[in-house]
Length: 311
Image 1 (cartoon, rainbow, N blue to C red):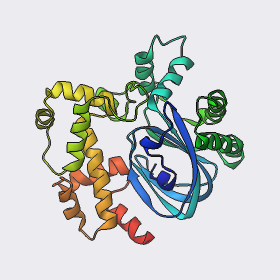
Image 2 (cartoon, one colour):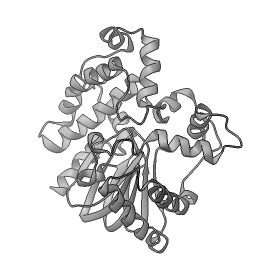
Image 3 (cartoon, rainbow, N blue to C red):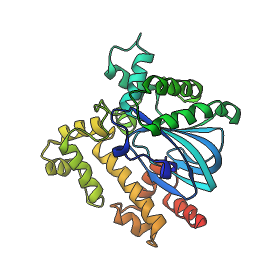
């Protein structure tokens, strides 16, 4: 959630070996949409904001908890201010929890990944707990933030994990799950990443290079074949290792980058919507509008009008 703005934690600042951190912050300015390579649980403590993501645009207020999967674009528009506590969770850690929760049915972590991607099909959710039930979380959140800021994860491991389990126990009944297995193309869009030894960058230099190429030149007419040639891999091999690292195919990742950069142009420049679309590599306005809405929750025109009202 782009609401994490001032409360966001750069991967370089994560405590070494810690599977999650927690921070509380008050946000007063519009943020995002942006996406990060970890799961976020965001508890609204005070104030309100318009949140936009794959579910469209919705208001969030005290008593709400926002759940965002890895690599999901989201942005926010505070109504004056909003105070949130955000828990940033390593995807490997989350898969471990699924593995042990269903240990009687799952044989290993790969089974856990397949199971998770089959039941958690909505990568962006707003959980309406209500202020009374969400109020139960506040002491645990405050202690979790304090221990997380202190940074001695090894010494406080058992207490930190106990606090997270208490929080998860309260919010879990509100998380939407599905018994229906989704298609391979959908799964490549929302699936968790494979184990990365708790590192917040892919292990392979060629995959990091591919991401740099896409980010540096999103307007290029990329195909899987020409991207693979740039990093000296076969198209099939690049696709496999890229999905393992980022949970998306290279072209799905490119679409996310284009949506993120288009949003930046719409809020920070006077370019027309069409010109901004072309600058990020989309020449068809209808196609771009459909993809932007899929990733951000608003059409480009709606997004610009929203930001204009905020200004």
